[in-house]
Length: 217
Image 1 (tube, rainbow, N blue to C red):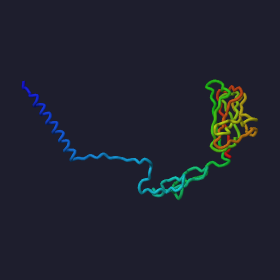
Image 2: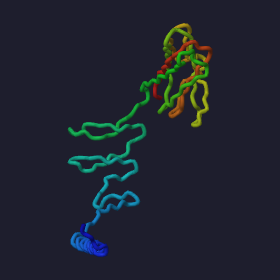
Image 3: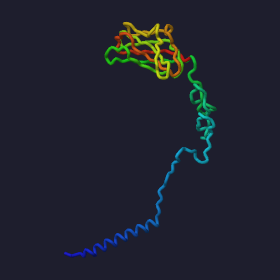
Image 4: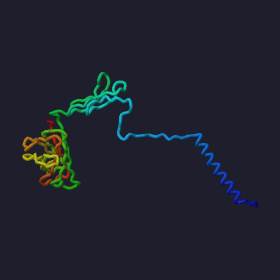
């Protein structure tokens, strides 16, 4: 078998390593690779040459004719943003929202999970604007007894006051009943106040839906 001089093999390996390093240097000198960099500003700024049409707090910017930027000034309280045909082009515009006298309703559901509903169970909701509660209706899953007292919050950290005194919504040995709020102690609720329904008495109903018919004031 042929024999190899170990020192010669090591010398050859050293020469190859030196040649590889030198070749890499030559290639780096001929080809310079630059990594792209993206610099993000610390705070949003408008691009150079950009002109905003907005002038006032609450302004809205949208695409106008041929894509040009257009300004829609802030509306007034109670208005809603809608789409309107302006000269054959659909454009955003402010229009009146719900006004005084607009009817509204709230439907709330109680579920006893197969057992009679317990006294003290509550459901609540918040009204977005001032309303008058005009009437109520109760629908049970089967004939039975069920009644609730209606309350409203008087502070932002809800403290509730009973307002249905004189005519609490109730059903007796039936599956439906309804009535007016004309006998209530108070049937008005302010904007952003909460309305709460609390089960009272000794109910036998297992499920119950309560509907309140209201009018914006």
